[in-house]
Image (cartoon, rainbow, N blue to C red; front, side, top):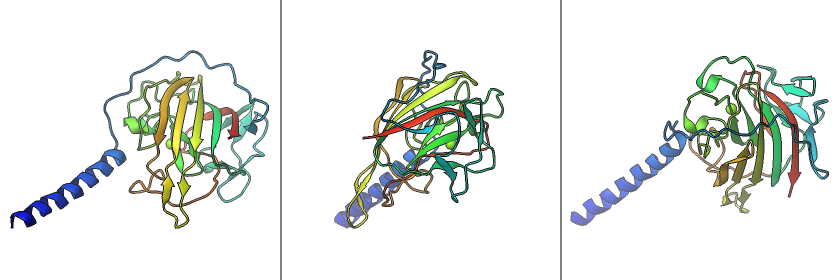
Length: 244
Ligand code: MG
């Protein structure tokens, strides 16, 4: 009886521990708040180095399509790309594996909404793993959903936001996950992010595809860069990538 009871406690403990671990990663966590770090101005664009693949140089969206393959129809004007709300996310025609990605983005000049409904977009790596874009300047939300979070997984180390309307940079280093022949995970994806030149994610091991009910991986190969249409007028410029 004692032995059975002990095993029962062990099983119950494992079960509860397992669930709470998953809930911890999946739930919307509100503390601790990443401290605010004021970045230097990023108003000066960072153009691509000589070996980069240019994804957006300010002129057109020839490198992008919607998920159904139709031409990307977000607005391009004055060298700037702006989300066209309700038109759907856009993705690169090309697929990528391990890379360094640079992009510049700006929250809408007119501040509207709050929490997750203020300047929401996202850059979704290999079409699966979202680095959140949000107006996180004086805009409390769950910390693992603020700008620079690995969405619903890792809050940023600090809040390095520029004011709405000013330009932010993301420099993202991505190591793709690797899978065994049977489709099971060999090694997870790793993400490092500099936000306005400030380290906010340091080689974090991604738990799985964003927005699944539970963190999980499903075997895949190369994938596109996706920019999310979340209904807000987020702007982009200077998007380039280097595979390594
Ligand atoms: Mg988003």
